[in-house]
Amino acid sequence: MLVYQDLLTGDELLSDSFTYKEIENGCLWEVEGKWVVTGAVDVDIGVNPSAEGAGEDEGVDDQAVKVVDIVDTFRLQEQPPFDKKQFIGYIKKYIKILTPKLDAEKQE
Image (cartoon, rainbow, N blue to C red):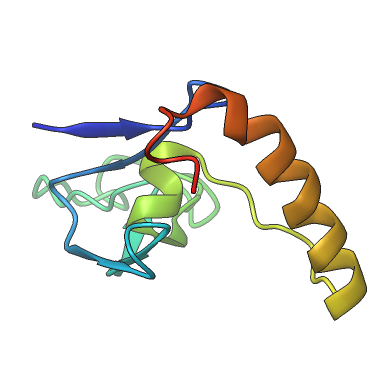
């Protein structure tokens, strides 16, 4: 399995177990994610709680949460929305930090 890491932080971003395609000459990836439910699981073991003396308020709290699988797997964080000026400033800083970490042929 291939795991892709961020060059700047070393954080895991993606693995080849998710369907993705490269766009913009490998600068961007488009990844297909799906909604999954995480958290508490309802398991029916065939026991009748009322026969066991349990009240209506006893039982497991349902902590199930619906999340996107790739976001949950790699603990990705949503970026705040940018307007055009903010985005250009962010990308310029990112490119300035990233350029020295790339090979000479990839810097272009």
